[in-house]
Length: 59
Image (cartoon, rainbow, N blue to C red; front, side):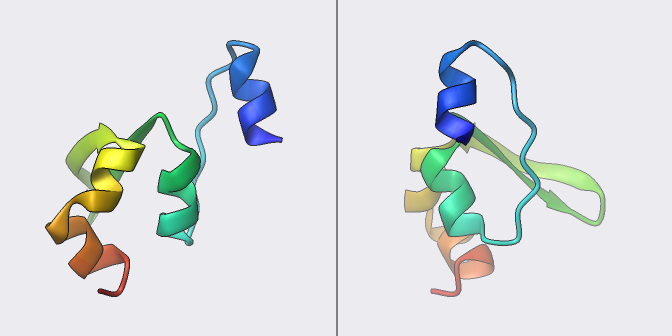
């Protein structure tokens, strides 16, 4: 559903506890800590980032 809506040109703000799933479908991702954005990037790139993987994906 999210991808279908996005293809229509609608911007979606998705707040999700399942970071892996969210980054798999996101064009862009933002990592927040204590209310501040500490990292941004393409969703797929963030999945491959060692810091994101260690801190948020349990690896």
